[in-house]
Amino acid sequence: MYEHDKEEECVFEVAIALPKWGENRRDQSDVIDCVEVLVDELRRKGLIVERVLGLQNEFIKLAAPIEILGRAAAELQFRKRTHIGMDFPFEWDEAEAFVRLPDGSLFSWCERFRCYSHILYGIVNTEKSIVLKLDCKEVDWKPGESLLRKLEALSIVKEIFPLHDEKMRKQLLRSWAMNWLDFTSQPIDDICSYYGKKIATYFAFLGMYTKWMLFPAALGLTVQLVDFGSLQLLVLPFFFICVISWAVLFFQFWKRKNTAISARLQIYLSAGAESEYKSSQTQRTSPTELMKKQSTDRKKEKAVFQREEWFKWLMRFRNDAFIILSIICLQLPFELAYAHLYEVIGSDLLKFFLTAVYLLAIQYFTRMGGKISVKLIKYENNENVEYRANSLVYKVFGLYFMQSYIGIFYHALLHRNIMTLRQVLIQRLLISEVIENLLENSVPYLSYSFKKFRARNKVKHEKGASKRKSRPIPRVEKEYLKPA
Image (cartoon, rainbow, N blue to C red):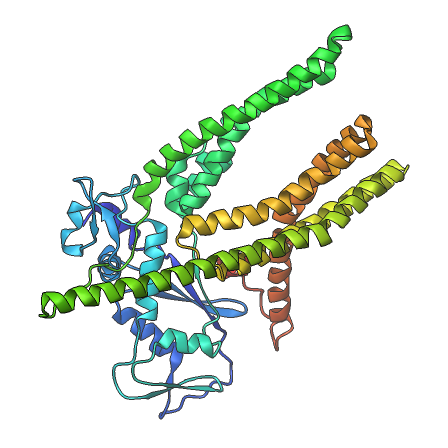
């Protein structure tokens, strides 16, 4: 075992939130406390357990030695890259043959979390029925039943959530969040190891986009501040051509970089799928019977395939028609009403207020449209993830296109007022940035602060709590109170 793995054994990565025990809990000989049983079963599985008592809840922090995770990964049949360049199902006894991640660990965080879930939900009663108790609740744990699912169904287990690795978090703060000197660089390997491939790809795009935005920003400031005199009519078309060329080049270079990043971060992923090899029993039949059977099977398969293909096409047509009609009947009048009111209103203050209300409404319309699109796609029965993603992109693209360009087309083509169009673009840019920062940063922080205040206030109003010194909130409860 590597030294790095020995250090990781003491890092608590998962926590289980439980309701806080009542003070009137009575010991009974004929029942067993369900929390004690859960802790004993977790330790029996080889996990390292630490119990923490918070202000409102109790928490069970879990860590696992690399051997326990490795054996769980072998049971899940993770497919991982070997040193010979091929992917094979993981085996703990052959762990040295598999490629380690750049940080030295054997599994990424996503793989480890799947291993934890497999271990936790794999706690099953193998004996006779057991009566468990927590406060006034009694639970009958039947044979063959998962303990954790039983406790979740009865709301005894509130949530299973991941914990921050403080060492990795502080390292990311130093090398990423607080690295003001090189604000466009992204430690992709560290981000992918800690947050996963999707978030690492997003920040890789964000870093490249920020770096490439320096050119159109400098060109736009030059066009805005410098007076070109008689050449002004030629400068604007040149600026538009440069921006369009910049967009085309940016997307082409991003496609190349995205392909390189995907190949580079592929090591962090594992298929984790069950082996697809199935044993088939051959039956001894005559050649004539075999040919007849094959012909009949082909006809049945063809009929089933045609029926499924038509059903998929009809479902996709129905969903696309629903989205298009929703955009035409609901969103288009809303967008045109906003553009018309902006043209009619004379006060700049009222225009700012109207734009702010419009952008707030757009946030909820987009979120609602995305949820509806996802629900519709579930009934399309797409062939693979790529078709599913494309279908979602087409539906959401219609919403974004209508929100982004219908007002611009209204001012540019119908009213032909370039100054109003310029003012609309500036106000939407400024107000949208303020609103997005408030929704993404301020609202989660205020929500977390309110939950923390309510937890402390509830403890203060308990009997005798005002006489005692207020106890600080443990870190695990702070992570539990933070919004997802």
